Image (spheres, helix red, strand yellow):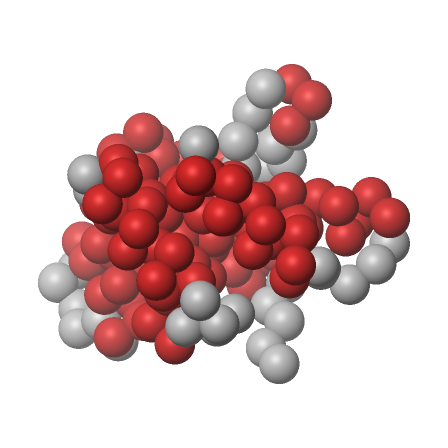
Length: 143
């Protein structure tokens, strides 16, 4: 499994911005990431200031969202829904799309559950619990 460092993840997104500005060809993955970036104009200042934000630390307890984590979670969820892994997530995504009327909001609903699963795994020093993840998703569908 590929396990990039924090710097590598950030470099990935900074390089996409640089390649887009230079009109350099993007890989398929970079094209998907660019489409996500374009949906998040609130991150433009950050993504255009590599020197300041390459190692900058965001702290949730201060009410801050790490934009690189957010963008990475989008990529994760696009992959999960495209391959239906965990099983049933693709259908759940379509149900959330129908419920909320758009894919971006549906992805953000899934993101809440992905974040909660990861938070619990970190808090209790366990492997991520797919059952917790799917239960959270199903609760969002029913809510």
